[in-house]
Image (tube, rainbow, N blue to C red; front, top):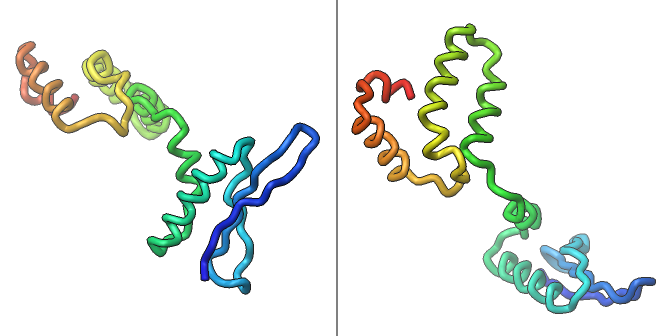
Length: 140
């Protein structure tokens, strides 16, 4: 039977609350779910782990840490992409820079995970309204 629990530990600086869990009975190893300064935080993590176990999933605690990281913006991703393109000629590199010069002022500060197709469509429509040719818009 899978279960989770909270252990109170005394330290030099006070108390810590360690969340532990097992994915099965006592034959399964005891896994660490996190250590917290407050019991409230430990209870929140325990509830998360209990919910994951009840849904038949192994708790992905790394997903919690990844969610806390700031999302990468389109400008950051574009710069990483440009740096990774080692196989292109100088003229292609210039062409990429010109195309990104059209894109980044409009959408560059948007986090990638929040960018929607409608925003991209609005940007394409704005290029069309500014008089850019269809081939230029396609390349951009």
